[in-house]
Image 1 (spheres, rainbow, N blue to C red):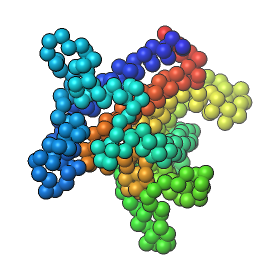
Image 2 (image 1 turned 180 degrees about the vertical axis):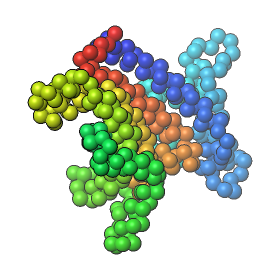
Image 3 (image 1 turned 90 degrees about the horizontal axis):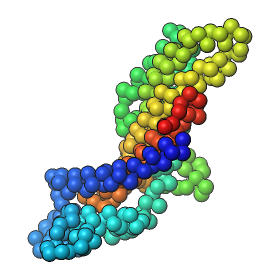
Image 4 (image 1 turned 45 degrees about the vertical axis):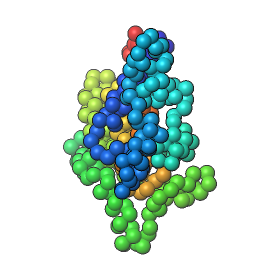
Length: 332
């Protein structure tokens, strides 16, 4: 397993390098207002926009170009926007925002806890609801609980999350004069009640929405396993039903379920942007959204690479977990 893990990790820098290059090119070729014009505002003169472009380094070549003669590679590397940015990123310097010249590292450290909390809470809800309802649906196949779970899966996957999040603000205020907290971020260790009031409802909505696919896959996989000979043998031995379902049934269904759990985490990780935008939660998702609107390229580039890093690590953890649940899995 160690050799397999090291080999997978060896690909990580190459993947991040490819993602960074694609993001860098796409952000600079998309149509729309350029960053300098967005910062200068309406009515700015051409001279003002050119000055801002020079200050931001946007007048330099995007990729390394030859300086002529026998210029060393390091000089051509420093002579490009991408070369400067990737060099700083490798050294741990995430750069500064175009708008306000604030250090990206400090902003990331301040905003990351809010995003991580909502992702973690939504992920837990998704696993609990998706796996448990899927098991119940498979065990009570074609019964009332099965039809109820399947209807729940259809509804949770059909209704858009942004619509439910908007209703989360509107309905309590209209019916019960309750105002859902909106905006900012309060750490749970400072004010647990306000923190949970802010994060629990959107985490429940996002988690339930992300559980639909996991529920259907768990049901399908468990139905196949519960029809197996070794399950009938375990029942014939008089084992407790919970033991048969969880120890023999669920564990042998773990491989596809773990794959679906990894996919659910990635979907929730991206879907948290919607919750942060609707509820104005001061996290990475809202930061990414607002930075994309004003073409704050260093922020969008960094968060894109960060997202790619998280996705690769999650996929690696899922692959390694196969061996823990299924001893038949071997890593080469």
